[in-house]
Amino acid sequence: MDLIKKLEEYRLKKRITQERLAEMLGVSFCTVNRWLNKKTRPLKIQEYHIKKLLNRNKQK
Image (cartoon, rainbow, N blue to C red):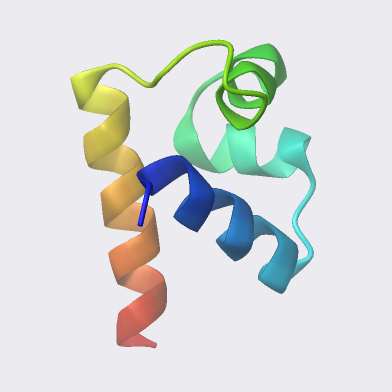
């Protein structure tokens, strides 16, 4: 599954706003919004942090 799709599912499942998700990942709201609307893709370092966040959730 696409990483951004997983991120959006995580966000909806946890009832997290795009603003809060941006804070958690250390990026701006606009950045998260562009990812979710398929206007841009995360950089490699951002992908790393997204994967880390999603994996942390799996372990709980």
